[in-house]
Image (cartoon, rainbow, N blue to C red; front, side, top):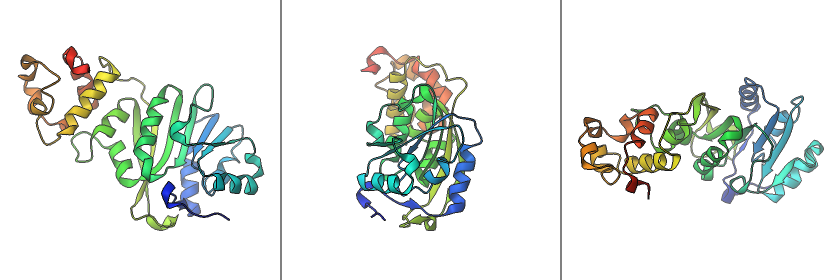
Length: 255
């Protein structure tokens, strides 16, 4: 068998009904190339390798889990990449789908890494700590809406699929989990540049209790700041409004 490593945030899924539900969610959209992130003990992997006409790869950091998977599922020979997902280059040519029970200690970093790959990603089905999953899917105006929400939703449609209870894992985590689906937006809202958009969003939410006039005064000239829009707080602006606002930033705000 194998050991569980707290340092890697390992909580392995053991509920077969949840495993099947995740795989069913994956199959609602057609795909031909699939990357599993952190297969661990193979709870999802054993179903994924049975999918017909799919080019499959898995990325796993833990050498012990790599050895266990290869021994248990010989079909994985040549399909496991022994590496950190955060250091991985896109493992396929063309578009591919990503699936995983993502380690909670790097879940936000994982979403931003997915964002870097967005031109090649046609879907992500991911299980995250519930708080992170909710933030990724949060609508504007909600308390959970923040930097992650805006930056992810600018490029992906995010759908919160279902909760997963602590008892579905070994060992049970101290928090609930949630499964979300990301699909590329048909139209990304126009923005002056991704860099300026990101700077604006991070600056606005850095002092989220303040109005935009106070939180973002370093990014706009005084005439622009007199617009009543700047009396709002960051959580009140939609993704599209942030994108439109990026065109009004002064050039010095891009530094």
